[in-house]
Amino acid sequence: MSRHLIRTALGLGLFLTPLAAFAEGQQTQKGERIEVAFVLDTTGSMVDLIEGAKQKIWSITNTMLDVNPDADIRLALVAYRDRGDDYVLRTHDMSGDVQDIYAKLRRFSADGGGDTPESVNEALDEAVRNLDWTKGEKVRRIIFLVGDAPPHMDYDNAPRYAEVIAQARKKGITLNTVQAGDDGETRQYWQEMARLGGGRYIAIPQDGGQIRQIPTPFDAEILKVQDKIDQTILPYGSQVEQAEVRAKVADRKTASAEVQADNSSFYSKKSVKKEAVTGGNDMVSAVVNGDVALDKIPEADLAPELQKIPAPERKAYLDGVIAERAKLEAEMDGLVQKRDAFIASESSKTAASDSFDSSVKELLKEQIATE
Image (cartoon, rainbow, N blue to C red; front, top):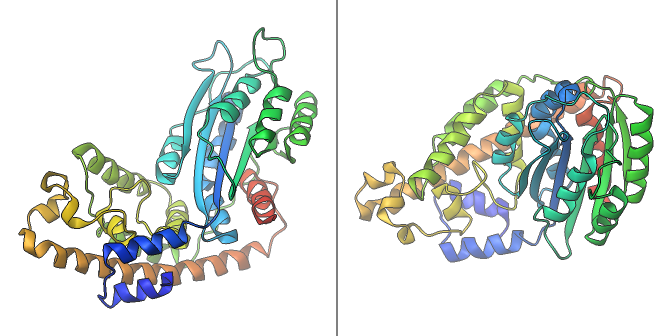
């Protein structure tokens, strides 16, 4: 059964059995997995670029879905500074919980540094050797190394980028380098790393370039519909797991209207598994996707809304919420399509940008679309 027919059936109240939903999930899981690790210099000189990245991470993930709507997207973050700073490395492993990765990126801050070389070798080694990259075929593995200073080549017993990149290529990982600013020594290293890594070298302004947000006439309505979708979320699991789901919903409401609209666009375009929030533990998404069955969840792990309802009536209540979610998702899909068309029209009126997000998105389009 196609995803369109499933959503139509849900909207009409014709609900899939868990077995049917599971079968559909198995079909869509055949889509390609895209794994992207951002290795970010978080020293003080990178403050503007990092703040811009926080604004555009959802726009970047949307680009992946524009190229491949069936893609299963996983992201990772490796922040690096240098010896003597508050930390050398701070890692958030590869995860399909994009909402959680976004929240962790928002907590990044730029500080430290002072001397020109940084612990680039250690950061690359961490990304290549220690992140949880998926093995096997039908996986695109991409690293973006983003920084403005060359690697320390004078540290004893430290990894060397040439050896690390050779290991990356054996794992099928493509390395792209993004240089902020115009330091000549950094340019030489970044160009060589990209060449060795089978990727591309990109130069952008020190501040990350003009991070352009395009308000649209549809943003306000998207936020209203998203709020209604959020009200259909029924967390399940332990108290900690349920609290995490609610925290994610609350966290995204603190972003700007444009970022929230980008966030909603991601969930609208995501077709492998329909979700209102990534990371699991939303009963509505889990039942539709065939991940769980209502009668298999212990009473104590149900959302308070379901615990208040007599057990024989819970399925009917859940079915009603599923139908409401489907109608709202269909409404969101229409708004997102109109928003995308508006942004494309406005973007065509200006020259191509050399900003961090524009450069990364164009490169992703190229590398993901390559057969």
